[in-house]
View 1: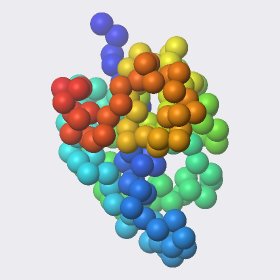
View 2 (view 1 turned 135 degrees about the vertical axis):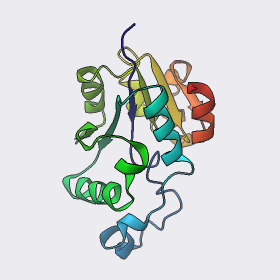
View 3 (view 1 turned 180 degrees about the vertical axis):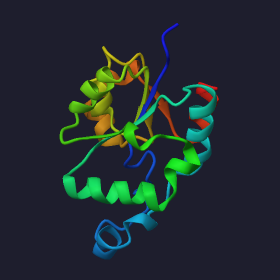
View 4 (view 1 turned 90 degrees about the vertical axis):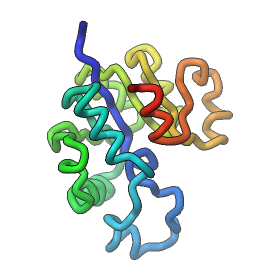
Length: 164
């Protein structure tokens, strides 16, 4: 059997921006690493990395070069690599949402978790197992035709129940 691998979006799936003040410039400029992790993400990713995906976990984020620097600092400052076992070389960034699909193809991703149905819509023919994490209702309305191809999840505990 082919090795299974997991791709995970970063914003709002690992780093939880949902409760932050979007207008708090010092938070995003100077204190980005204090933005909380999604509840249960460290333990879940560690367990999945050790027991199911055996090191084949990839973080794939669409962001600006500025945000990429902030995200890499957050991962380091929050001891993400040590806590989860995810390798720094398994982190990928792209500038457009649809580019995540090519990264998934290049790394033979078999599972992907994202908070954006638009992103998952590009993967329906290439990634067999798609998980929509705490999605935005307006985006669901816009990309509704792809909902039958994804599994909607609201927590890392729910993801663990489905994947272990």
